Amino acid sequence: MLKLVLLGPPGAGKGTQAVTISEKYKIPHISTGDIFRKNVKEGTPLGQKAKNYMDKGELVPDELVVELVKDRLNGSDTQDGFLLDGFPRTVYQAEELDKFLAGRNQKLDKVIDIQVEQAVIMERMSGRRVCRNCGAPYHVKYHPPKQDSVCDLCGGEVYQRADDSEATVLNRLSVYDKQTSPLLDYYEKSGNIVHIEGVGGPEAVFDKIAAALGASTV
Ligand code: AP5
Ligand code: ZN
Image (cartoon, rainbow, N blue to C red; front, top):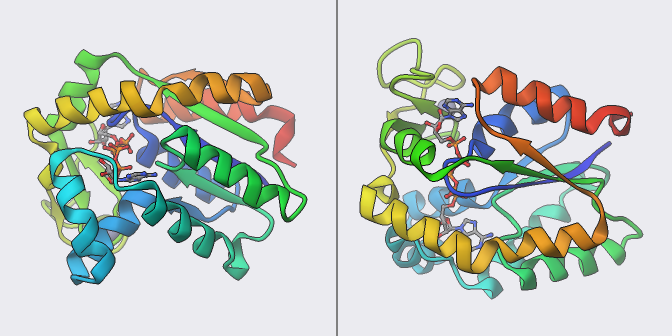
């Protein structure tokens, strides 16, 4: 089973591709953004801490994120394979992930970097809607739910995220440039990163990812 990381700026299509990758390669999808949003919705102590950062488009502090991901990776379904979406997001998080995996004699098979230019990102984000229950992403123009405001996958309510306003998206892009893009170099050194141009429809992007995973899918 594959151990994968999905990298890319906000709105690149990580969550969209994650749904298909997780289904086709039979690996659990772990989205730190989805986990935080669920905690915010349920009003847990973690959610209360994370909300302020998320609403401003800032990163949640490393120490909160790393422990959460380690706990999740200790689950019985993630011992042999997983798809991390939105984690790691800082070099520190990447180092902690590598150490954690080394501790169980594992390493990442591939890091998939989805690249999309800023103008396209702004259009995607302004039309983006997500399921409040399962986190599945939609778009008013490119991928509307079959029934208005109802998730195709789980029947949950489809809504607009609080951090998708234009000003917050611009801040998230700048946070990505400063704090997350150094990870490209980090993974370039380990030699297992692939760069995917995230344009074309979701199916076309998935085909590029599948081709890049190629023989490593067994
Ligand atoms: P998170 O939820 O991870 O947000 P993000 O990285 O900003 O990514 P998005 O979910 O916005 O975009 P995406 O790339 O998944 O795109 P999508 O598939 O939806 O994080 C949110 C917040 O949580 C962070 O700001 C931070 O505060 C906190 N957080 C999370 N993880 C953290 C961590 N590790 N450390 C610290 N803090 C953390 O697609 C976008 C839109 O485009 C959709 O509408 C979709 O339908 C459409 N679309 C997708 N692909 C295509 C295509 N090929 N063609 C046309 N439209 C498309
Ligand atoms: Zn749903």
